[in-house]
Length: 433
Image (cartoon, rainbow, N blue to C red; front, side, top):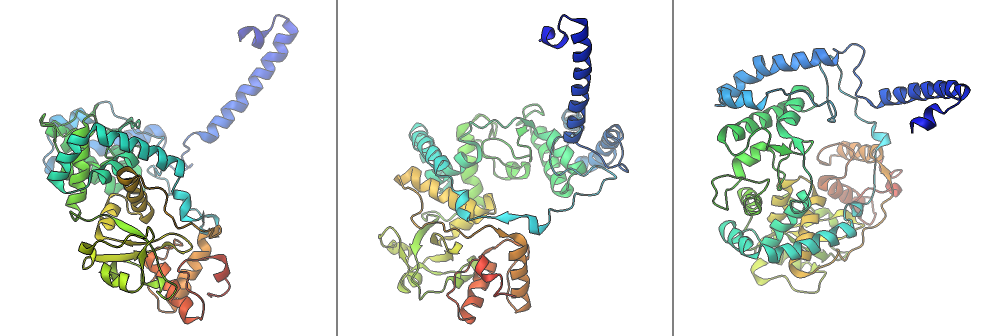
């Protein structure tokens, strides 16, 4: 490499030196664009680091001490700590938060894009193998917490690839950085103090406390507050170890789900077919009916199997994440427990489908995810505002079609003499004004 750069001829060396310097300047310029930049009016990084150290001692320590954190644990956690400037969503002192991307620039596609068949098949294959490897532990966990093993495995697989994912970030560094200068400082401050209690309790040293760039820790990807509330020592070694212990990780996931209301003896839901004469605008957890009533209206499992008799009087809810453009479901309250893990309909459906693949060898949902077009969020936002002006409750007016937006749209479509689809598409932009 040196010979190529400098050559052997003095003339070539001079020319190449000039080229090298020019190239080096170009590289520096490019790197300066990539580096985390501070606005002109913001403090320098050195000043911010100094403010951070002052914040730790004068602001965070009194609150941590008041909550019961020992000075020994506090000092150990923050020995030689510095801010992590590579994390997203940081707002250094003196800087203004970045403006949200304009709604008109953000698009969403069919919810079907969330369900990578290749990924689901891979996770299901691993899950089936691990269900045998850990069969005894899973039986004990299910007996203790009432959560099916396939659900536990599905969450484990989705969150950390069954514990195989590399989750290397020092949790204290991440949480402290975000508590000091992120867009959600209050939330991360609570999580940081919870992490200090984990260290103080002896389950983990600061060096062992590893997590994601967002502060979620271990194989179940618990935030520190969830760890304190739900982590379990299931292998009996005296430590709640969600980093290296499979029994502790599996039991902690089950305890989390039970603690958030998992109903023993029930699954997550069913893919169904909904007759054209049954309105799609009946979706949502607040419009629950006995599953027997849904069945009496003509809704049937797409598999052709009947609903279990025990489910007849139990509550079920209609769920149409893509309206009539995609698979349709009757879900149980356990579906909404899965959403407590990650507040997304698609996440909970992913877990349910993966669990069914692991337990029963199931495949993809049978209903096809239709092409809803690349609608702009600004288009959906305009529809939401129009529906609100017409007296509809669309939930959060944010340009995203949640269940209240979907069913309000279906109600409006029916009243306008249109076939309800319960999902925004380009054909409605000019109609709904």
